[in-house]
Image (tube, rainbow, N blue to C red):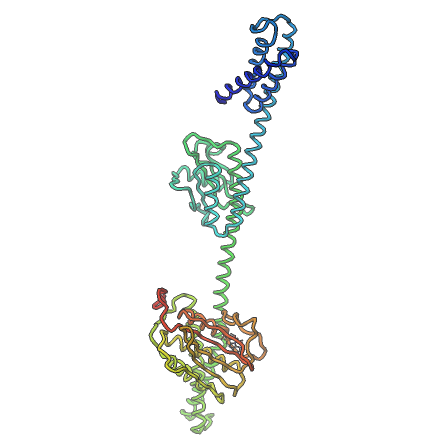
Length: 506
Ligand code: ADP
């Protein structure tokens, strides 16, 4: 309680006296006492108990001196005033004591209100924070702002405590670490001002949820010897509780994310196994069949069937087709693995689109059968930066799909156009087309349309095309075609994308 408050209480008594003097002749002196009573109540409420008591004593003296006959001295003509004085003093003291108590309650209420508000702010920020790092930053910021102290957060990592965040320059010694560990292991507050390790300079509160302790929150007062008030202690535990819930939420989200990534990897593995068991084995079995038959013929065994030249050629042709199919599949699986691992390297060199298209068509030559395949090119097409082998792979996949997903004998049209500094390669077929809701999804890994009797596949081809085209800073998309069928377009930049460091990417 400062000296100023006592001076103010003297001021209040002086003011009551000044107000009373002009009306002294109009009122009975006992009524003037009310002015002093008002001064005492005001002092009690605004200045505290001590100043209010001083005001009570001074009021009695001032009243006696200025208003009770004989005036201007402390003598009393009428001893009845003694009763007034005593009653006044008693009432003054009681009022001061009550008002003092009300003041303390108001102060406590304000503190509690501030405490609730700080926790609300903290909780609001935590709700918006998604990552563990943001949550830890929020914890450090809010707790240090509210308690005005240095803060440290430890989280459990493989049964050990790991320091995860702290206010700048926060240092701990071995003994303080041991207190942190004790608080974590026993899920109880420990350190400064508590029953466990009270001599420590840091107070630790466990970050615990229903599933157990996740770590500890430590607070060190700014100057040595400073303690945490009981209210601050409660506040610290409130912060620790909210922080623990938010940290648990972030950890669970991370876990779910990891599980999803693992799930994806598992899916890829299953697809690989499926391919190996089916798509890879089918061509191998027929190649082996061809080789076995031819060997038997060569060795002239008992069961050997005589084959004429044309039949042999037919078998060899078949084996070659199957080998090419096998090769394409293995190529796609390898590309997918490289894309997944981020190790697909582009060898960008100026390439002729006509050559790539020609090479891709040659690759699939045996599959077109009776289909008319047309190629339309624009005049004066410049060389464009590309990885020849990978781009050929894209076109092979798209042409392969056009064949797989359109009826035999229907035409396949390849065209190239230049537009907005891009080369547009279009591959159009007259198949069943693709529902507009799935035009984008077919480029996702393992996404296949659900069509009865559809050709076999694993759903990797288009996602690989997308990966390769995007690595070229290009775009790929599918559209419906008027008159039926679908068009796949690959847009490649005519010039090398600058500043992206695509070439030699690992
Ligand atoms: P896959 O051919 O191994 O199934 P893709 O990624 O190449 O895998 O293709 C994904 C799906 O997109 C295919 O399963 C098919 O349903 C559909 N699709 C691809 N190309 C065409 C096309 N030209 N016409 C109709 N549907 C197609």
